[in-house]
Image (cartoon, rainbow, N blue to C red; front, side, top):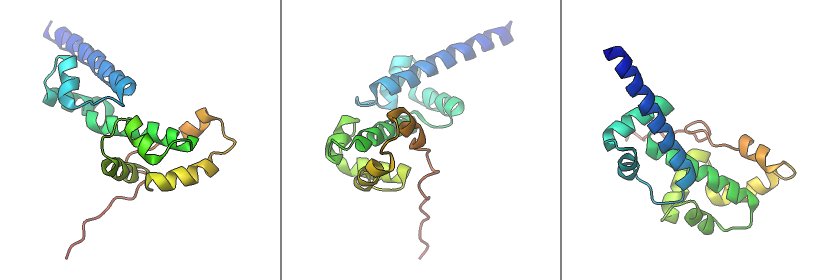
Length: 149
């Protein structure tokens, strides 16, 4: 009986984690933090973070940043918004933080991406451009190694 109960709890947790992930997808431009997401899921922030990482391979914060950068990439490819407008449209409150996160994930600053992406995706349907240019954390950007003095 205990095994059946733990299986039921695991399935409930997966359902809750899927709802958290879906909320991040829907509300990526809103001010979200782990505590807010955890409250909405009726979990502690620590438990949510551990379980989310176990199931999805990254923390809720990392997932949120990836979603924001994906949306930013799509807006920058359109070419009709400034980098600053895109920054605020996807939920960042600081242009510096946006530029840093974008560069870490994509490998180039947003201004360079905006300039180059317009040419690179010209003539490609938006649904395919999104798939081809989707950021993959720690794969597109070269990791920075600390300098040893």
